[in-house]
Amino acid sequence: MDKMNLFGLPFERVVWIDADVFVGSRVDELCDLPSGVRFASTIDHMGKIASHKRKLAYAPSHCWNEFDFASKHAGHSLRCPQSCPKLISIEHEAKPYVGIAAQDLLPSPSQCPYILQTGVFALSPLTQHAFQERVVGPIHAGAVRSYDGSDQGLVSSLVYAHHLFHEHEYMRLHPRYNTLARHLRHAEQSWGGQVKTVLVHHSRETRPWRLVPQTDLRLQNGTGSLAHSFRWARMCGAVHCGQLRAGYRLKASDAQDMASLAVNQQQSQVERAWSAFCRERTGSGRTGYSNGKGDNYSQPGMNSVR
Image (cartoon, rainbow, N blue to C red):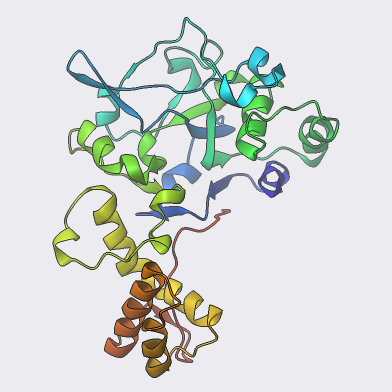
């Protein structure tokens, strides 16, 4: 659980962004959250859209639940308390705020402990003593349960069951800071066109580097996951081409090898499409950042510590 080590780093504030998150613009505001905010994240349901009485709403999917965490089937029965609303109005999300303090959330996190997303979060780390005593020790002792075996389950348990932070030290971020790619179009439409996604999170089935690259120019001003994949290829395709060249032990300047690779019948459709895409970029000179040695780079989503 390398991500858990962030909670003990010797920094005033850490902003973590998973490697499969596309950073569309600067997120300095996450570094500049009020000093009293120790942990800020989105929650698990943000991005799932439902229709209720002709109005769009978020449909919360899971809550941390002590009974479920003690159950053998915890990962399949993370029920929210009956007092929690089944739908949450998203009218407020039409405003480009950064986050909402816990004391201003209705219902409060203690009433409805929605699963905390850890793909993107801002954190004020603990002291080394507190980190060892309140994070490392309980985890090693098996006292911290994780509903999915990941850091997301650990963090939710630490916050809700072990009270790692006081409730007033938590802030819920606007969902634009962690929008799933497959929900991108519906999310932005539900915000009335006034709010744009800042951080796009690619789940397995929407990762552009595992799909045929989108090159249709009609997508450049579009919305939704295909348009986003087009922009990802334009901005980050160069680094993926560099990784492909390294993987196949090809030189960046060797277009002939790239051409032979593209017609290799043993390749999948996605691999052939990326080979052709990379050959075109190499031949046209439209590449990413250069190190001066003929290798070109761009940078997709990355783990960020500030």
